[in-house]
Length: 321
Image 1 (cartoon, one colour):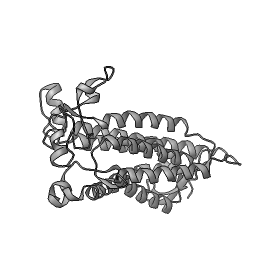
Image 2 (image 1 turned 90 degrees about the vertical axis):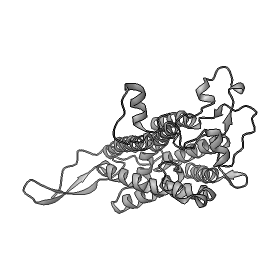
Image 3 (image 1 turned 45 degrees about the horizontal axis):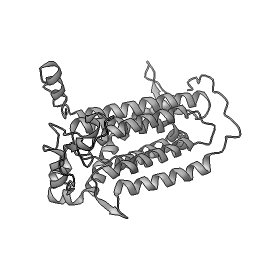
Image 4 (image 1 turned 180 degrees about the vertical axis):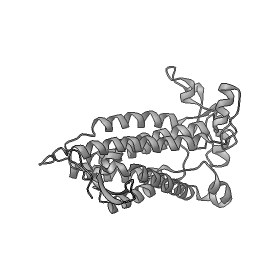
């Protein structure tokens, strides 16, 4: 594993970078950039097709005179990406503390200031609320904006999971044994030991000592690398959403499908991850997943209706004084 980029450069090139750049943080940054780039491209398409209106941007010309330009909402994407980064980290850390409250009480500083330990749904909820508020204030149609972000959101989650895999931050699965591995599955996809893990100990030991999950296998060889499973599934689902982005249905339909997809994926993977049960034998993430799936199904039921009057393609918008 490569919790720091210097670990990777040392193995590949024989030298260590003097900058303490963590692989998890780098992958999270790449995830935000990827999601923003896809959302920007889709908002530009929607704007050209007349599906979303312009936003007003204050600009100053070479002579210092102020004026307002009308532009595609994509001009605000990087501001929204910044909001996603800030509120996403805050929400992720907050929900992780709630999820592992006993661990937090035992050692608040370790959980609070650790670079690991981020819960995706906390980030999604807090970042989503901040972005929707900002977009509403700028006059962007929220349903269309949510549709534009759907493919990038699920892809970004998958990319973030690669960061978890490289860092070995404890967000892995339950114990596994190569003795039980089907012959057609590569060993690294079945059982991983996470050498140099960010948490500083063997994953089976970490599960038992920190998470209270005692392995029931006689001879465990590691844990399931669930991050790789999630990346593969999320990349495939992002492709499906991207192919369906020009759907003829009402605004919000694609995001409703995203909610079903992401809820189902997370609900299923939780059965082989180590997370405390909250209610009904389910983890906090599974309960939120159920809520997401139900909300998505309701959205699909209400929005799977063709738009009666398709918007007219918009000509190039000129600046207005």
